[in-house]
Image (cartoon, rainbow, N blue to C red):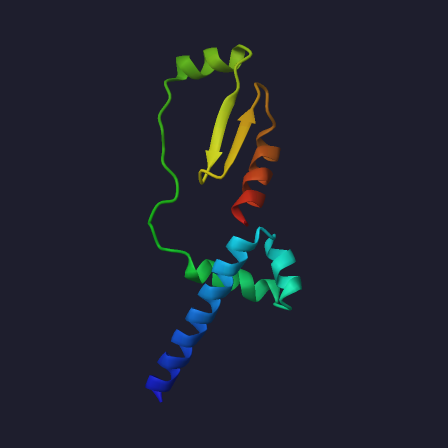
Length: 110
């Protein structure tokens, strides 16, 4: 019985990997792809998360001396945040941290 279950799970993994690869190549949003293929978005998100490679830490801490940061923020310079090499967010001095957090959460869902 366990052999059958393992075979079924392997089949589901192959199917969802194909779907995820197709979605990435399609240029559609997750919701758009799910609508087009009549898939449940929660199920899609579950498998997307399940199939993501386990790479350990997803963020790198870069220490910036406080003097450099305060000089940079007090001038007209912007901070630049690059997310997964896919998104570049330029952050002006006096930015709203809450809004930036929301933006990062939205991008993280893609």
